[in-house]
Image (cartoon, rainbow over all chains, first blue to last red):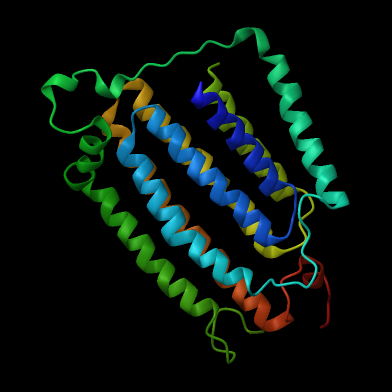
Length: 171
Length: 97
């Protein structure tokens, strides 16, 4: 039953991000969504993938977002209690409830845990073995990923360079 | 449709609507662009439910690409804060500042 709670918090958390509160509160909602998403993946047996998600999100991205929330600081931040944000929130949640009502008779709760199928014969979990393939057959995509990250470094440097020499002349 | 599939589809749709509709801050638009988290969950569930373990590299690559996207968006945010002094999307509509 815990997975149903996870799904519920996932949808409500993303509605909370989408309903246009101040960036502080939106980042809080995103933390909640990321944590619950890790729980969903653990429910399906993907412990390594959920670990990666947890580290990348809470360790990497949200620190950066918390830093840049300081750039968007405002004296009176709007949480979900204030008028328009509450309206968006109610609108989104009601929309999801209506769409889930359309599918109501057709739920079926499959809960295969197939990544464990041959668990007796295997040293590691299925997703660990699959990610390790990135270093053999998936080497091309690994190189592409590294190249894209390097390219992003230069893109960021060019965007924020300033003094009229960067990619944006106005900065 | 299993509850997990409905959950990540509806969460993705919510994030997309939040990005498309009215945003006050550029930063909150970037935050709702992080709905690719649900795409990560979707690809991981594909791997885990269908037992195709060799597919489980694709969520990792998705995460790397989304890190690129987020950092480029934050660079644009910093550039906007330097030119306009604020990151409100309303001030990006002005023809002269």
